[in-house]
Length: 374
Image (cartoon, rainbow, N blue to C red):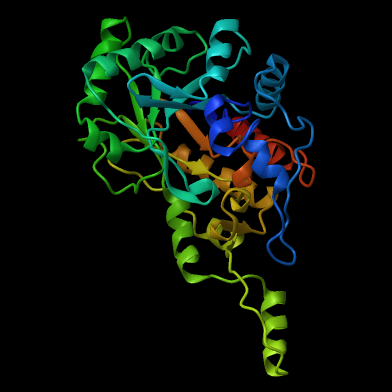
């Protein structure tokens, strides 16, 4: 059996850029929302605080080295850098990847997920405002996009499957509607440049029921976690048990209460229990999620996965590893982790003050168990 290779999504939003300065104020980074977060109800654990790495700046090479070493020590095979190409040569947050390429450091595998979606102000209550629109203007732009990516693809650290660079598409529907031949043209360019093609993977955004094969994909990331979560998201909407009963008592004794804004909260145990990985019509790689609370970005419009723990994450890793045991025909045993460092979504493997290295230890424990069984 091939070795399980965890790949963790990696957000490069931890350094100022002119666009974010303009939209949100001078010096804005992901940490801006993380540090100013407030608890929205009794018992809400906000803000969350980074532990060993602190409030880092990804322009600092030593930070990137520390992250890579930490990931490697706990069994993460590589990072999936979010990549933002909006068309007409427009990029955002490209500095980190460019520095990694130019410096040759850290010596750690990576690939790209093209986050092909329009940026709006929805994170910060400005949902009507378009900040950067995702477009697919013409063949010339497609070629420019590929030529930007080519030095990365050629880098020995870039993750490849059978001499095909791994390239993940965040929103296959958006790309298919914008340019249904984009993938085939990219593949042809890869072959022209000495590769055996591209290994194109759809993200976990869309349902596993779609026909990804006919859309040109070699594989996809499982949507199983979202599928297990959705019934609970739709079913439960409340602030907190204690607040609910306090409001009821006030109502019974005639004290007029102010209507409390609600936050959607689900119990992680129920979601993990319902988690079941299934194949689509292409190889489907399991995706696991340690935690989630995006209220630092979205306030009361956010969603909270409550009662997360390293122990629950361990159960997810075990389910994913067992699923992969039956997929001996897959070219690689990728295990996708969402995410390494999406702090404003409360979606992290990196150590925080509450759990320390708990989630990383859970990952390492199950990986070691299954490597012994091989």
